[in-house]
Image 1 (tube, rainbow, N blue to C red):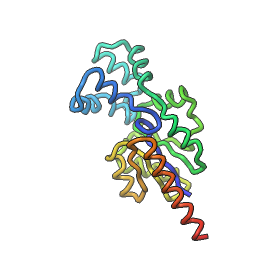
Image 2 (cartoon, helix red, strand yellow):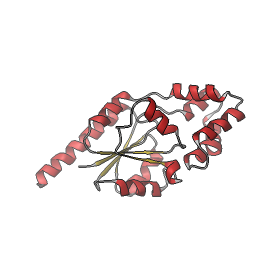
Image 3 (spheres, one colour):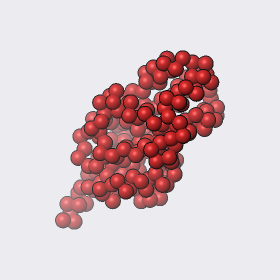
Image 4 (cartoon, rainbow, N blue to C red):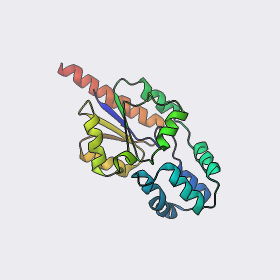
Length: 195
């Protein structure tokens, strides 16, 4: 058996902040500065999601409630991936960079509380991917030593590979599910021949 680890934004649900900033106000280069100024503080638990929204609403002259609505309107569940995750019997762990309250709100909104056995969210740990320490926290929660990690960001996959995890870069849902099924099938047949 394997443990399956999934990123949240860009895999289980759509991205929010990068998409909103791209549509509303800035280039990719500007977004990196914005991310450093706002999101990074939220991701490590220095500020809450509510405080993050307050800052962005103030600095971009937006109404806080309208901003939250815009963000949640951008957040769409990846139902095909969610159904696949639900169908699996392996241990499933969420590994996400996010501020306090954001992932939990989305999980509640889309009734995803049963999706993961464990959740490792950066604000709780005060470190973010790709810091190796957050992957070690995940390893401590794993029931199996063999791990497959799915993330849409290559830089987040590099430390996982260095720790010996199998990785899949999420490009699209069909490709990811196909790769997961192939790897899980190989693991199952390998285990069966070793018994």
